[in-house]
Image (cartoon, rainbow, N blue to C red; front, side, top):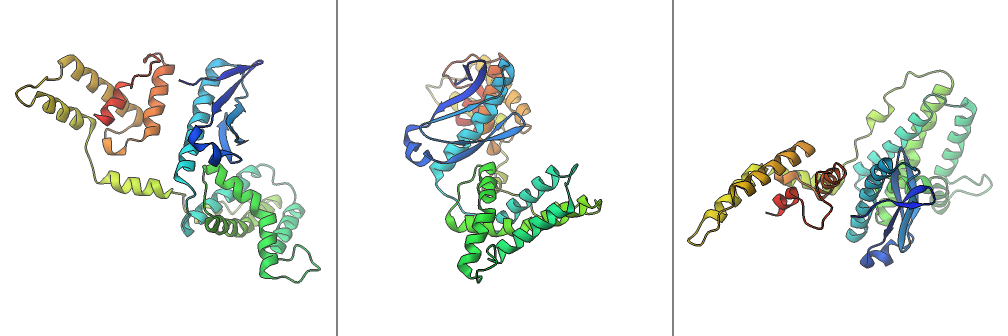
Amino acid sequence: MPQPVLIGSTYYLRVIVPRELRNRAAGTVVALPIGDRLSRLTLNTRAKVSLRTKDWPEAKRRYSQALAALEDHWETLRRGPGSLTHKQAVALAGEVVGVFVEAFDEDPKTPEMWENIEAVDLAARKGRSNPLAVPTEESKARDVERRFGALTDATLERRGLVVDPVSRVRLLQRVAVAMEDVARVNGARARGDYSETDVVDKYPAYVPKTEASREQAREATDKTFADVIDAEVARRAAGRDAKPMSSSAERKYRRAADEFASHRKSKNVGTVTVRQADEWMRTMLEGGKLSNTPDLPPGSSLVVM
């Protein structure tokens, strides 16, 4: 199992990009959670980032979180660029509003700063960043990209999303509009008016399409771990040359199933994800309850039983 690497006196995550993804991964940017911050990492043939700690237990915790995000990025690259619905774009724009409003909640700076930001944003949306130029559709697109493009990309990176050009433009436009809320709310707070507290509530929560489709499929099954074990016990006991499962093996699987179900707070087999199994395995390893061998842990065996 990969582990943090000590370089000097600080621990690092250092992972080789999977061979089949090297061409697609080269130059892509991924945001990895390191402690309470996100670190933007541009990939080449390796992924290397400081875990910003000298403490081994903390390094292992941060490594596990960062590696999980990196593995999500691998899966995104394997799937190829995705698309965003209108609702998803609005939801992501709402997350931008939430970040800005929270960041300036205690110290919203000055009203003049937000008035200036509002004016510059408006000029970009109208294609008048250059006040001497006649606005055209091309100048609008160019000015919006220059003003909000980096923010749009950071929003996608934060979610680990790789989207097609049409979806990026859709999100870019929603971010440009959403920044009106940021300037208005923070400007009011800079003047001492904190009355608008529900600005983020008008935006929907972001739900990945894959997650939504998985949830619909999972709701169709209510099979539990106990059902899977019962079926396997019955299968092995059937037939003339049957080799029934031993009582000790059955107890082992049932104990592992109960522990895994407790970890993920559900006994439903249909809702298991690879990430949950991986997180559980890491927890077991770090807690010394599982040996660091290439064998599958009992819980993983249940899923493929």
